[in-house]
Amino acid sequence: MTIDFARLPRFPLATLPTPLTEARGLREALGGPARCPRILLKRDDLTGLALGGNKARKLEFLIGDALRQRATVVITTGAVQSNHARMTAAAARAAGLGVSLVLTTQEAAPEVQGNYLLDRLFGADIHLIPAGPDPKLAVAPDEEARVAEVMANLRARGERPYLIPVGGSSGVGALGYVAGTRELVEQLAAASVAPARLYYASGSRGTQAGLELGWRLFSPPYRLAGIAVSGGEDEKRVRAARVATEAAALLGVGVTVTPGELTTSQDHIGDGYGIPTRGGLEAIRLLATRDGVLLDPTYTAKAMAALIADVRAGVIDAGETVVFLHTGGIPALFAHAGAFDATD
Ligand SMILES: *Cc1c(COP(=O)(O)O)cnc(C)c1O
Image (tube, rainbow, N blue to C red; front, side):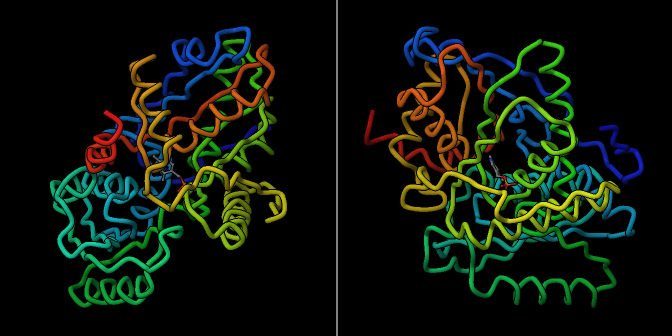
């Protein structure tokens, strides 16, 4: 289908297209061509904005929308090691805007490391709030109230705040992975490959919404294999369906996505959001030592652990190709240095 993205405001932030490379070493480590499908990496860790990641694609449309609305400052929320917060701060600065972040943390004085260090370097106005009691979820009880308070204070100072929901997962943000799907479909066609599956890490669901809508619009050969990294599946399915349907409306295509069509695997969350798993740590080591490519413990390691588990279980025919969407997250590695001590 021909989709006209040019009718939507977009602020250039990402270096596109991102490379599509092959993880040859990982394939060897998993039994070689006799046992393991060919594994392609869609390198959205290389989008280029402030150390990269998937949020750059969403932020092109979100910042475009903020500028169209003549906003002077953007505000968003996330965990203290949120990649989304770091990239939103960088994107705001690139567009000449102010930035306020409401960040959740279990600690009174979180270590100034990883994404949180970068938030501070971007000069973000940071508000720390206590994280909720359930580690499976990445939500804080009084988040909405704090955001409303920060917005009111900004308005009182004459600013025009633009609120970006957690993860950039709105209809506008989801456009990033509709456009991203078209990019990937073109790369696959040029390389004459028809992968059976696309694995990706799923958090706030904007990526899922974009990939699902893109799947309906551009008919890629692959099935989507979303791997949840946090709980709350029922509520998140509803959100993803709403966001995908909103994105369709913005594009002027009459597509409705329902919660029942949206599934993700719940098998690799482990003890909760941001808590490393054994499978994830193994995935980080394997890809690092075999292919020289880094993963992060919160998102991409858990998605790669799912791919590895599926290969070992013989779920995917060795003659097939699979794509792993590398969504980034690298700065959080440094904040998790301790997770690697035990196994060294
Ligand atoms: C935010 C993020 C995701 C998940 O994307 P959602 O759109 O929030 O589901 C995956 N990987 C990394 C590294 C991220 O930062």
